Image 1 (cartoon, rainbow, N blue to C red):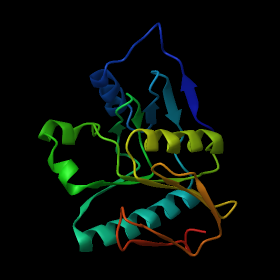
Image 2 (image 1 turned 30 degrees about the horizontal axis):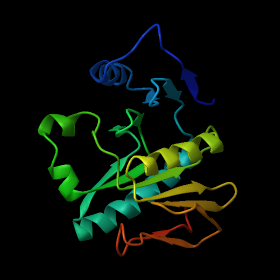
Image 3 (image 1 turned 45 degrees about the horizontal axis):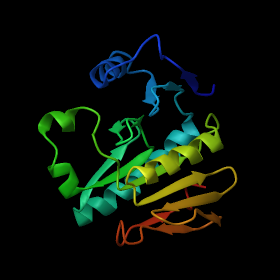
Image 4 (image 1 turned 120 degrees about the horizontal axis):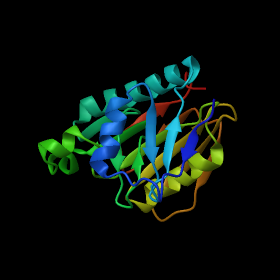
Length: 191
């Protein structure tokens, strides 16, 4: 199954609260919303992708637990980007001071910020071109570093602020650079 995109305009325009309630009422489904209001319904991942994504989250969480510099989020966390899109990166990280600037209500709903760091793991049901556009959208909205991991091709696309995309073939590790200082993602078990 692949994702399904619905153009609701002009028939329906969901407010942020209505979109949040739609997501809460359908917790077995994963929804994203583009900046133009299109609703994207994403299928659940398979076991292989889910396991690899858990490994990525675990490594990121352990690094963050030692450094206490921010918060780590999984793929069920919604972010309201400055351009109006609602996105759910597979893994993400947000600086602690940005998180602490939010109200309690903002923390309980879709986070009204773009993550500082994101990871997208290409699954068999994903469209590579759409994920590449999503990665560029993150950068355009404030992400400083992003990794698009393509297990099938054993390739990583690295997205950095104000730089061209770098493509690396079969890396053993990825470094968090100046965004996640000291973080090293071991890709051995991810491949």
